[in-house]
Image (cartoon, rainbow, N blue to C red; front, side):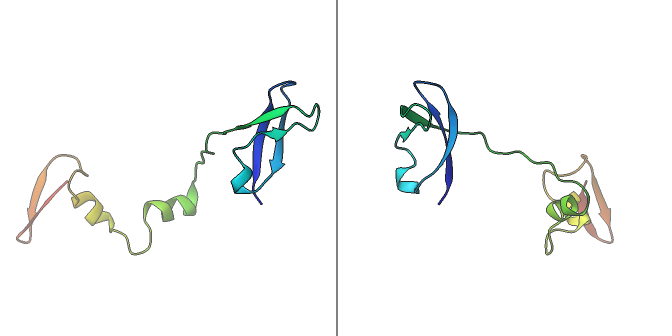
Length: 90
């Protein structure tokens, strides 16, 4: 079962409780004073990835090649070339 964060309205204790999803929005009993504790919502965890993992995220297998990314509409640096009879933008 998932863990949820709660904060007691009476004594302000913050604690975790393992509860079913169906019971997650119901007040929990505070383990310190037996008061009602409301569920607390935490912001999502932000991560920063570097190295090989970051490269895989930027360039997933089967994704666009470097040239295709630069030639895609809205991705580039503002000019057009004609090469070998085809026109592409940068």
